[in-house]
Length: 77
Image 1 (cartoon, one colour):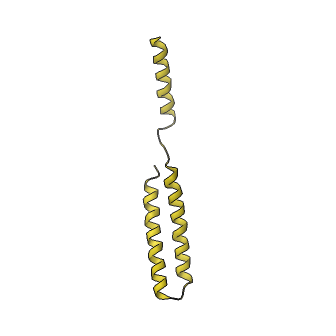
Image 2 (cartoon, rainbow, N blue to C red):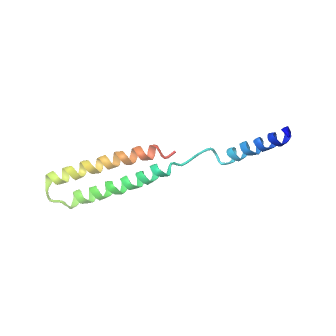
Image 3 (tube, rainbow, N blue to C red):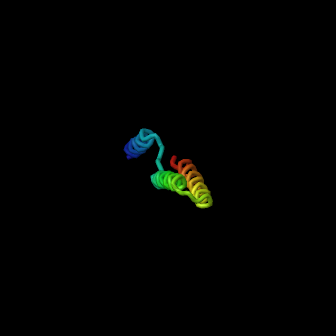
């Protein structure tokens, strides 16, 4: 019985080692992609406006989305 448990435990540890132990945070990936898309949209909107104040607001929103993207990217792994 002890041999069976030892073999089962060894097989379990070997399967864990085979997967590399790395996990991917898919929620963080989705947030990163979403924030990247938001930043792009804000930048395009800023480029297309003729109002200087509105352009500044949109550029700030793009920077905030870029920062959120970077934070989410850091949390992927």
